[in-house]
Each structure stands twice: as C-alpha cells, then as structure tokens.
Image 1: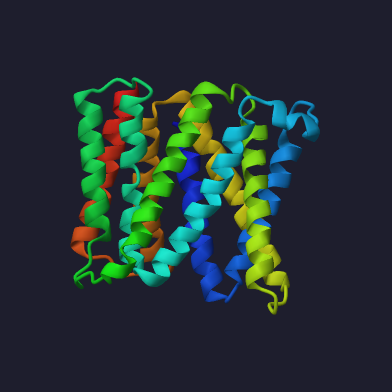
Image 2: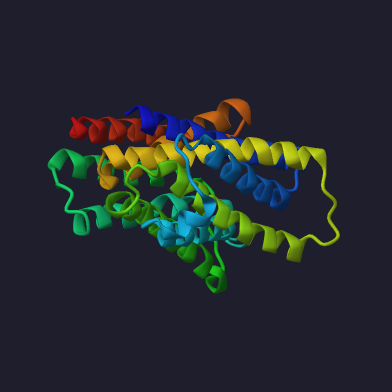
Length: 284
C-alpha cells in the first residue's frame, strides 16, 4: 500500500498547489507548461540505467506513451474548462466518477477477480464521492455545456485505463522512461498552447517556482500511481486513490482553506475511509 498512500498524498498536494496558485495569482498556463518541462527532465535524469533518446521510438511502449501524453494534458485542460463553464461541483463529481471506466475495464479486459468485499468497497467509494461533494445549493447547469464534464469524465477514465494497459502489456521495467516520454509529449503540446494563448503575457518568477513544485508533485503522483498498478488490480488502485484524494482534499480544504463541510460531507469522508479499508482488505 506504500505506493498508493504516496500517490494520494502527492495528488492531494497538487490540488492544494492549485488553490495556492489561485490565491497568489499565479499564471496557471505558464505553471502547467513549466510543470511538464520539470516532470519530463526530472524523469529522464532519474532513470537509473543508460538510454539513448533517439532509440526511444523503438521501445514497445513508445506509441502508448505518446497517446497517454495527449490524454494527460487533454484531461487537465478539460478539467479547467469544465470548472469554468459547468461549475466546480459538477466537474469534481465527473472527474472522480471517471473511476468507473478503469474499474469496469479491469474486470472485462484484464480478467481481474471479482469478490464481494471488492464490490462492496467500490460501491461504497462511489457513494462516498456523492456525499463528499453534496452541497445544500441545487446544482444548475446549462444543457449546452453538459458535454464538457462528460468529455472530461471519458478522457480521464480512458487515461487511467491506458495506464493500466501499458503497464500490463508493454512497459516492463521502463516505468521512468515511459512516464518521462509521456510528460515530454504533454510538454510539446502545452508549449504550443502557451505560445498561441499567451503572446502578451510576461513570465514571472512566481510562475516558474509554482511550475517547478507542480512538476515534481505531478511526477511523483503519476509514478506512484503507475507503480501501484504494477502491484495491484486496477479495480483496486483507481478507487482507493480517488477516494483517498477526495477525503484528504476535503480535510485539507476544511483546515487550511476554511472551506465549509456539512455533516453529510463528513459522513462521505468517513464512508470513503471505510471503502479504502475494504478494498485494501481485499488485496491481502
């Protein structure tokens, strides 16, 4: 469970970082681009073995790394766009509910065992998502923009599934090189977006610093997630990590950002912890 715990911690710190960037008016676009630069460079420098960049295209996982690099940045940008247009609540629910796609894929594509305890944990996890994000105010959304959270739900779920597919069939021991290549792909695409959208925006030192921190956190959260997939079923890893992020982010928001949580939200966090326990128990 070591990799799962650290994936949850680093992923939650990514969310906290975005909250702090908004508070200190950091350019999200610049920070995201620098984040991919740092993550890719750090990844390649962390590779324990020797490698040649020109030989990477010959690796069996190269094509999948390119695809995942696209889904990584696409999912993130859809998250930002959906939050702006459809609302944070709808976006948060849709992003976490994307867990359904890799969980179903785990049963259908990777022949992962189905047990009563595992199913109970997954169902409790989904119920915990609902309770944790439930607000007193009614959720309203324009029908014309409902496609945004749906696309984000689909892309993020597909990304997690592709991660498992790559780990299952082609990565082998090349975890570091695989992720570094995926982040490098995201960097290329992110740089293009940055050039197109921020012609008149000046670089600031705080944006660079934020990007460096975000890049290191992003690297470790994804690396530990992939290592977890190597050790446990995807139908266990994805729900545990998503529920853990929801619970820990809610607690961090309450204590550090004074975000209000209702009794129902706290009940959701408690149920999330119970779901994690059940799914962790089914591993042993």
